[in-house]
Every structure is written in C-alpha cells, then in structure tokens.
Image (cartoon, rainbow, N blue to C red; front, top):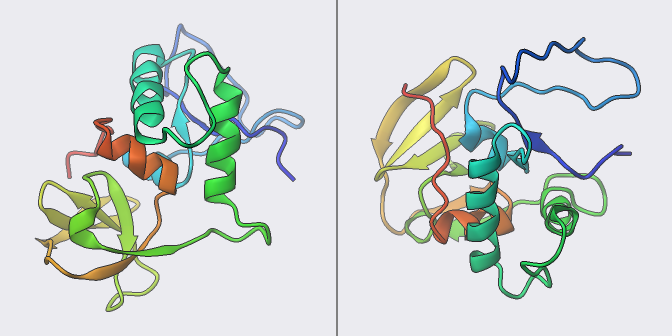
Length: 170
C-alpha cells in the first residue's frame, strides 16, 4: 500500500529545487501546520534537507526506544520500520492508546473525551486545539485526565528523551 516507509518532514524550500506536486510514481507531498503535526502523523525529520534535526531526532529516538532492536549502526530504514508499525495497525487503521495527560511529554497530540474528532497539542503545560490555520482554545492541562494518544509510541519516547519539535507560533 505504501511505496516507502520513509515518511518525512521536509523544508518547503531547499537549494532552489522545484517539484511538480503529486507526480505519478513519486512520493505524495503532504503539508503540515508544523513539525509537531507531522510527528503525530508518524513522520520524522528528513536527513537531506533537515540533517541536524534528523540527527537530533534519531539520537532522541534511540535513547527513548532502547528495546526497539534499532541500534546506532543501523540505517534509518530500521527506525522507519518501527515508526510504520507504530502509525498503522495491521488492519490499516491508526492505533490509539490511552494515557494520563500528565505522563506525556510536550509535543504529543491527544484526543479528549469531551471533544471527539478534535486533536489537541500538549505544549508547555497547556492543551492547544489544532486547526489547519493554527492552535486555538488553549486550556490548562489537567492532571489525572485520561486521553486517547494520537502520536506514535516510539515518537513519544523520542520527545520524552529530549527531541523538541517545531511548533507553529499560534
């Protein structure tokens, strides 16, 4: 179903390159509000146009996922395989887990029981409701609240290990 397991977050501009969007036989371009949204969708930073971010993500991912079977000497495709298993269930759906909000690091997206179908970013002690135009309706992050977690498990571990995603200023 997927041409590649490398789901990446790239820069919009890099070395003056121009691409024809949605070219047949090539990867599908998706555009995210920010990196936190891309990470929640199961993507990772690109090693070509965002090398420093990709290295930082990989280091945090390896630190946060010591039992993944992926090692420092493995190619990035090994990490991509684990990410893919985290973002797509065997039936093709997006796996969700339940967690207490206060156990999740900044940068994780969740879904609240009182607002099904909406995604909320856990960021700097608050929950920020996602919209395609930016974040709105910030509310304090209540301790003890159980939520559905949208961000893949291994990415959460990378965030907990210190990777800080780019977040839209809204």
